[in-house]
Length: 247
Length: 55
Length: 223
Picture 1 (tube, rainbow over the protein chains, first blue to last red):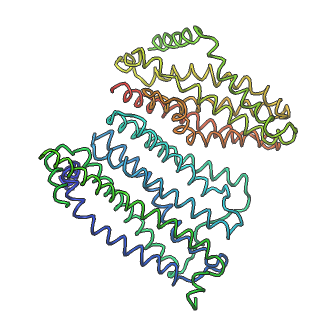
Picture 2 (tube, chains in turn brown, red, purple):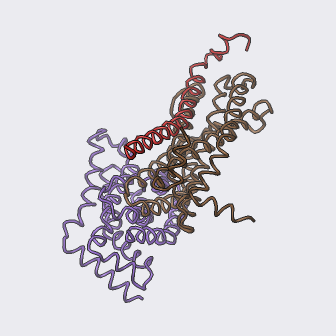
Picture 3 (tube, rainbow over the protein chains, first blue to last red):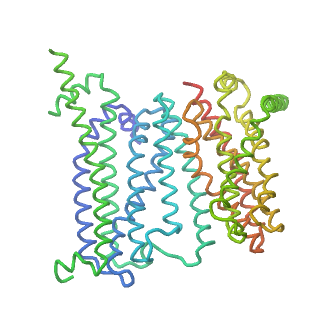
């Protein structure tokens, strides 16, 4: 395993250079994936028997939900790297990813609510899925709030890392208990996701959209991280050169 | 899906589908545009500082 | 080792008794919050009975959170927290003593008071043991998880709202299980399953939170 790549990534300057090379490609990829996926999902995918055309919201709801959940896992991993290896860049990643994850959760909640109106008749139901997403949003807010409340950057990094890890450990417990709570109070099961056998024309655009969302998440994350790195290292020579070159 | 007006109506579900997509893409765009704008601000801030230093 | 634990425990009690009025605060808060609900939604007994498990539990959550805010603050400010962190004794153990004391002063007190408020919210008498059991098993988890939040925010003046924001999502499983137990008792169903799950959470919290609390304190002190 080539560890030198990993170590190089830990230095802000190499991160800036490497991410600068990859960013355009990932941006192009995300644009293509999202455009093709959206057009396919809106135009070419067949209608769902029961839900009609409103099921097309799946092409934005499910990818957002996936990214929202994996982003939190990424936060916890970044937290572990911050605490164990003291990598400053891991803290930058955590700080920058949290707002994006919160936005993704927001999209999942809003699209889920909008989808609910034609499907179940109301904008909000306390079903297991939406309730878990709401709690995830609260967890994101907690991380953002704590990282901004502590002024000392090192302390803030470590405290937020601990919180992210504590949150991750709790997420399975929360998920199980909310699922259980839902079966206690709502005997009918509403499934917001696809039925087990989805024809290819239906799930392939979904796959494209999921990949496109992940790619866009990466684009946004890298852009924010590069910005943060420039801000933190603004007194160094290489940052001055980089800022000059942009114009 | 035979004509453009039908496409927009989506069998009566148009409001829902389009509002959901619109909000989603607005948020996605925000997440890309906002860091980009912040970067431009940082660059111009740096340029102003340089001009003040050289003056 | 045991001697240290005992000494610390006695110290907590002595400090607490210097201002006995402070010990009543979470209990009075608990009482007031519960009393707000009949005032807000009307005193009709059947409605109160439906709401009672949730109202009592949420009031217990909030009362515990508010009393946790200053858990480590006075020790942080006078420097004794730093001594704890630097001492050769395991920080997790010392932290457990503090949390145990907090639970006895807050959680246990709520457990003792809960039957009274259960009756005030028209809960039938046969349901009260389930209420007490659920709170008895759940409040330690509340104290332990809340102490994690208190440790992470130990240097901050911002107070209870941030702590609530951080910890309330983590309280949700306990809330669901606790109210589930009382509601099951209301319907005549067995409570044993809920009690066992609450016990599980309690054991899990007891084994894992001291690590997180100690980590949070070390971070806060090392500034």
